Image 1 (tube, helix red, strand yellow):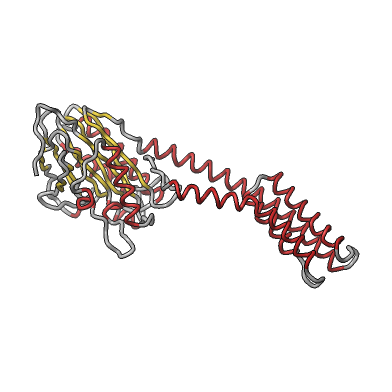
Image 2: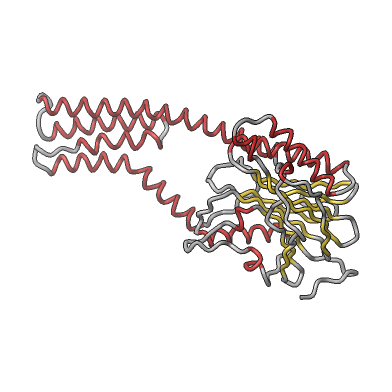
Length: 378
């Protein structure tokens, strides 16, 4: 889910060069084995080269190419013996049988790898489809606002996680949620589906943002009764909900234990939307009984709201320094939400050296600049 930016043209070219070298490596090994056998005394043999060639081809080449590599390996050992010692001796026969056996196993390994790869590709397609169904990409324009979202998985080729976002145009204005489910795996995905489903329904029908938060609380409480063990006791979701009414230049926020959103103004200033008082995450309502209270913040034209999960603020560099999005974005101006998220993701990669340890969900919502309305001044 979400778009992944390219990790760099240099890395791509380097990867292509490695693949080309590996592609010719079996041929180089076969040639090297023949040369080694031809220029060394009889006690030395090029069999290790001939054995390695089909084994390297097995996970990388097609079945016919692997079989052909094995045949060439057997022929190479035979030619080497013809040029040196006769084939009738026991050592020479043993070497030939060894290479032939390894070549046969290489073909078998190739088939296993290919089937595993097909299953992995199928699982990846299923994962992508599931994530699109559970966490669809928001439209670029919703209720007159410009929207961009990204989901960056910490593990390469991982698609499903516990971070979530949703944006919806409702009778009360544009409403959104960004959250982070405790845990990983399918249990977290189920909780994401519960939160997103409850939000879609509540955002459309509830008259207040506080009521939306309570609907999510009840939905997670019902989900918790279905679980056993630790999840039934400690399952929770940090979340921030926001409501942007039409035309009044404000945003209302309910924060349930989630990292505070940022407001990026048109002049490059950055402000944090800190809640007046802390609140427990969703799913922990039985530990406290205070009601949700939305707080309101001016949201002027030209400003962009940035919501994120703790994968952003917990990203660390090699010295253990956490990433500070407010500090890194201060003074910078971005023409579109997409360009903001692209720059942010790239900056996090530079900060961590590409070694993020947690998934990261990002949502940017920009109010178009209007000539008739003023902008923030620092």
